[in-house]
Amino acid sequence: MCGIAALFSMQDIERCNINKMTDVIVHRGPDASGHEYFANDKWQLGHRRLSILDVSQAGKQPMSYLNGRYWITYNGEIYNYIELRKELEGVSYVFRTNTDTEVIMAAYDYWGKDCLSHFNGMWAIHQMEY
Image (cartoon, rainbow, N blue to C red; front, side, top):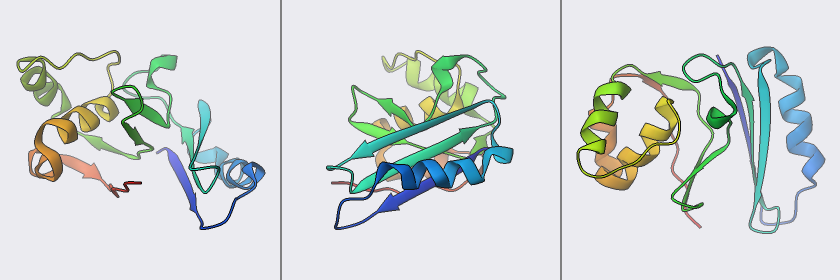
Protein backbone atom coordinates (compact mmCIF):
# COMPACT_ATOMS: atom_id res chain seq x y z
CA MET A 1 0.00 0.00 0.00
CA CYS A 2 1.19 3.51 -0.74
CA GLY A 3 2.07 5.94 1.99
CA ILE A 4 0.70 9.48 2.09
CA ALA A 5 1.58 12.53 4.14
CA ALA A 6 0.27 16.07 4.42
CA LEU A 7 1.13 19.20 6.37
CA PHE A 8 -1.10 22.23 6.77
CA SER A 9 -0.21 25.36 8.73
CA MET A 10 -1.02 29.04 8.97
CA GLN A 11 2.75 29.65 8.97
CA ASP A 12 5.42 28.63 6.49
CA ILE A 13 6.61 25.03 6.83
CA GLU A 14 10.13 24.00 5.94
CA ARG A 15 10.04 21.69 2.94
CA CYS A 16 12.37 19.23 4.62
CA ASN A 17 9.56 18.30 7.04
CA ILE A 18 7.33 16.64 4.43
CA ASN A 19 10.42 14.96 2.98
CA LYS A 20 11.25 13.53 6.42
CA MET A 21 7.68 12.29 6.78
CA THR A 22 7.80 10.38 3.50
CA ASP A 23 11.30 9.05 4.24
CA VAL A 24 9.93 7.40 7.40
CA ILE A 25 7.28 5.54 5.36
CA VAL A 26 9.55 4.42 2.50
CA HIS A 27 8.51 0.82 3.21
CA ARG A 28 4.93 1.75 2.20
CA GLY A 29 5.97 2.81 -1.27
CA PRO A 30 9.45 1.86 -2.43
CA ASP A 31 8.81 2.52 -6.14
CA ALA A 32 8.71 6.33 -6.15
CA SER A 33 8.18 9.41 -4.06
CA GLY A 34 6.74 12.82 -4.75
CA HIS A 35 6.15 16.12 -2.98
CA GLU A 36 4.13 19.22 -3.82
CA TYR A 37 4.08 22.57 -2.06
CA PHE A 38 1.18 25.04 -2.08
CA ALA A 39 0.19 28.46 -0.68
CA ASN A 40 3.75 29.61 -0.02
CA ASP A 41 4.63 26.27 1.59
CA LYS A 42 1.75 26.38 4.06
CA TRP A 43 0.26 23.24 2.50
CA GLN A 44 2.41 20.29 1.53
CA LEU A 45 1.57 16.86 0.14
CA GLY A 46 3.88 13.86 0.11
CA HIS A 47 3.58 10.40 -1.39
CA ARG A 48 5.47 7.10 -1.32
CA ARG A 49 4.33 4.98 -4.24
CA LEU A 50 3.82 1.28 -4.51
CA SER A 51 3.20 0.93 -8.25
CA ILE A 52 0.48 -1.56 -9.09
CA LEU A 53 -2.05 -0.35 -11.70
CA ASP A 54 0.11 1.98 -13.81
CA VAL A 55 3.79 1.40 -13.13
CA SER A 56 4.89 4.23 -15.44
CA GLN A 57 6.02 7.66 -14.27
CA ALA A 58 2.63 8.97 -15.47
CA GLY A 59 1.08 7.55 -12.30
CA LYS A 60 3.36 9.60 -10.02
CA GLN A 61 1.73 11.31 -7.05
CA PRO A 62 0.85 13.81 -5.81
CA MET A 63 -1.00 14.07 -9.11
CA SER A 64 -2.67 17.10 -10.64
CA TYR A 65 -5.66 17.19 -12.95
CA LEU A 66 -7.01 19.87 -15.28
CA ASN A 67 -3.78 21.88 -15.27
CA GLY A 68 -3.49 21.99 -11.49
CA ARG A 69 -7.14 22.67 -10.70
CA TYR A 70 -7.24 19.47 -8.63
CA TRP A 71 -4.46 17.75 -6.69
CA ILE A 72 -4.51 14.37 -4.97
CA THR A 73 -2.30 12.10 -2.95
CA TYR A 74 -4.15 8.87 -2.58
CA ASN A 75 -3.97 5.42 -1.07
CA GLY A 76 -6.59 2.84 -1.85
CA GLU A 77 -8.13 1.16 -4.83
CA ILE A 78 -11.25 1.86 -6.87
CA TYR A 79 -12.17 -1.58 -8.16
CA ASN A 80 -14.58 -0.31 -10.81
CA TYR A 81 -12.30 2.44 -12.15
CA ILE A 82 -12.18 0.89 -15.65
CA GLU A 83 -15.97 1.07 -15.97
CA LEU A 84 -16.02 4.60 -14.56
CA ARG A 85 -13.25 5.63 -16.94
CA LYS A 86 -15.27 4.37 -19.92
CA GLU A 87 -18.34 6.24 -18.68
CA LEU A 88 -16.33 9.45 -18.27
CA GLU A 89 -14.68 9.04 -21.67
CA GLY A 90 -18.24 8.86 -23.05
CA VAL A 91 -18.80 12.42 -21.85
CA SER A 92 -15.49 13.69 -23.32
CA TYR A 93 -13.01 13.18 -20.47
CA VAL A 94 -9.49 12.35 -21.67
CA PHE A 95 -7.00 10.38 -19.58
CA ARG A 96 -3.22 10.39 -19.73
CA THR A 97 -2.63 7.52 -17.28
CA ASN A 98 -4.05 4.09 -16.59
CA THR A 99 -4.59 4.84 -12.90
CA ASP A 100 -7.64 4.85 -10.70
CA THR A 101 -6.19 8.06 -9.20
CA GLU A 102 -6.84 10.05 -12.36
CA VAL A 103 -10.34 8.53 -12.62
CA ILE A 104 -11.08 9.79 -9.09
CA MET A 105 -10.25 13.35 -10.09
CA ALA A 106 -12.24 13.21 -13.33
CA ALA A 107 -15.18 11.71 -11.44
CA TYR A 108 -14.96 14.51 -8.87
CA ASP A 109 -14.89 17.09 -11.65
CA TYR A 110 -17.96 15.53 -13.28
CA TRP A 111 -20.11 14.45 -10.31
CA GLY A 112 -18.69 16.57 -7.50
CA LYS A 113 -18.95 14.99 -4.05
CA ASP A 114 -21.52 12.55 -5.46
CA CYS A 115 -18.61 10.77 -7.16
CA LEU A 116 -18.13 8.83 -3.92
CA SER A 117 -21.39 6.98 -4.50
CA HIS A 118 -20.01 5.73 -7.84
CA PHE A 119 -16.84 4.19 -6.36
CA ASN A 120 -16.58 0.53 -5.47
CA GLY A 121 -13.41 -0.15 -3.52
CA MET A 122 -11.44 0.90 -0.48
CA TRP A 123 -10.18 4.42 -0.06
CA ALA A 124 -10.06 7.51 2.09
CA ILE A 125 -10.46 10.96 0.55
CA HIS A 126 -10.35 14.35 2.17
CA GLN A 127 -11.30 17.41 0.14
CA MET A 128 -9.52 20.71 0.70
CA GLU A 129 -10.03 23.94 -1.17
CA TYR A 130 -8.05 27.15 -0.98
